[in-house]
Length: 276
Image 1 (cartoon, rainbow, N blue to C red):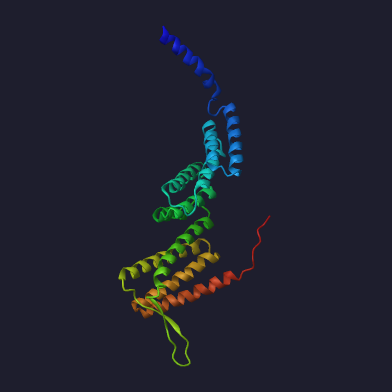
Image 2: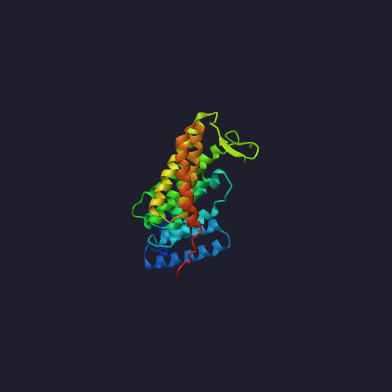
């Protein structure tokens, strides 16, 4: 009898609490979700990002179809990440933000903010393989506009150029030849002591040139695409010199000069003001 009485009292106490929780997606729940998002925005402006995240997540639970709530969740998590802090807790925030942005892209596949935020976060996490795959996914997506695809190819080309440049510009590889009387000093490149460095630079430069050529094909008037094509041809010219292939160096030098002319032409175009 006492047990029955206790259960009755427990249910009676719980009933008001249950009644106060609206059904997710109902009009009442949607109204509460809007209130939660307003509160999230308020505390976000005050710099209380963790609290803003809690309000945003509650709003999403109340109204799973709310279009704004997922953005609030991702941004409030991202805001808690501290650049330069490599503690596990901080890195976990970056990864949680990536997951939140990926959920946005499941709903809105072409959301540019989420795409770029994920690329940035992969970069700060030094997840180079994941970053490269992320960029390639955009670059290969034929449903995307050409300029967006070209932008991804240019970023990939820039990374490959940096990979080669860091090797070819080492002081043990690049050296200046003192001039004879009446002549100017000039730069020469020697083969690295570690042959693996040469092979790595060559692989990066060839791959980067391929990325840059695709970007040029997609956006022929892109100064950045032509600029990286130019720089990568110069890298390949250096590498040909290191290997002693005079003919190949001349060919890369010829292509470099042609690409440089196009890059210079594009850089001198009048500035195009955005249309209203």
